[in-house]
Amino acid sequence: MTEIFKMPDIGEGMAEGEITNWLVKVGDHVDVDQEVAEVQNDKLMQEILSPYAGTVTKLYVDAPTVVAVGDPLIEFDGTGEQAAPAPVAATTPVPEAVPAVAAAPTPAVEATPTPAPTVASNGQILAMPSVRHYAHEHNIDLATVVPTGRHGHITLADVQNGPSAVAPTPVAASVATPAPVEPTAPVAQAAAKPAPAPKVTEGRVPMTGIRKAIAKAMENQHTNIPSVTNFDQVEVSKLVAHRKDFKVKAADKGIKLTYLAYVAKALAATVKEYPELNASVDMKTNEIIYHDEVNLGIAVNTDTGLFVPVIANAAAKSIMAIAKEIADLAQAAQDGTLKPAQMQGATITISNIGSARGSWFTPIINGAEVAILGLGSIVKEPIVDADGELAVGQNMKLSLTYDHRLIDGMLAQTATNYLKQLLADPAYMLMEV
Image (cartoon, rainbow, N blue to C red; front, side, top):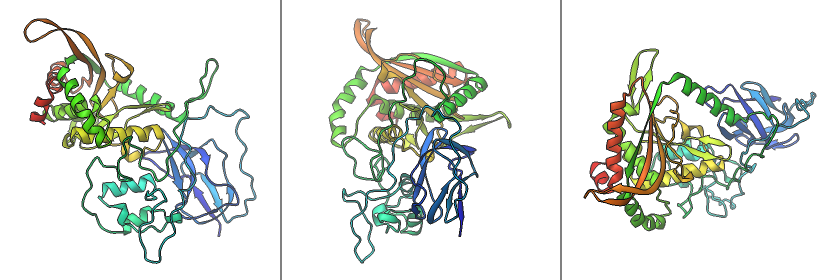
């Protein structure tokens, strides 16, 4: 029986996606839920799985090709009479820097007659990132799930039909493996990091899918939101000393303790105190939408573009937990393994240029949010201390951009002052949050 696999919708509102790489070829036998292609959808690259089992008799497009949702991709067990269309042009577009993902996981050890979770020879449980994310969201321990997928792979159906939720794991803990010193993305097999795009010094090149998505979003946000930016700074010598004291303890747990984790915790506490910063504006209904949880977007720069993964319910998490989650999400962004669910639901965002020694800037508000905090570097500068004496201080640069339709300048500055109090003294921050 001939089956035609059509381009699926792999994201909300997706109209098209680019087939960047085929993981199968004509003549290959494919199982249900086997990875068959890598698809670039706006800012995400992910594998698509076959809903059919059978022999590939035709690939309808070459890679790279942009395909609309619902268009045919693969023919199974057919005649394959029509050849796949040739590339549109002889020249190949500049490729996007996407990770080279293996077509199949590393084979698992031979299963015993008694059903039991199957692990790879390196001790890792074999499951796709989307399956791991589902298990994490539903507090399901993958070690208790019996796999039915090829090579001992745990499928989504295995998790959904398996044991009920078990005792929750710590929020910041990786669901893939125990946290190493350098956190890695939760995938069954390490993905190659994206290579930088070729440097172009002259001429025209097509925008990558990621750059087009960023360009459209930035144009829309800048056009439709009347934004204002307040610039400020805070003396953080006590914060610097606190981080120095706890860096080693964090490292012992496999956590890289950064200043960004402190700022994230302080911002989450600030918007709880000033909920207008954790809201959205609906101009169609003339309503303000206040969000209960603080879902904190963290802008991450990669060779392929800017990604904004989200730390859900950041106000309820410790600084250590936030630091671990930032590292895990940043690594996933670099590896190209972020999933749509990990980039949705942000209520306020932090953009950090401090690592590049940047100071003040005017970040553009993200999504349906009303504020974004720009974090600059910490600079040793002359200050006047509490005794009125000239001294050397450590000033952290802050830039708060806000939607002037909802937030007035006085409110923005008052909230910034509270944020500064928390950052200036970690002991006070612990008392408040």
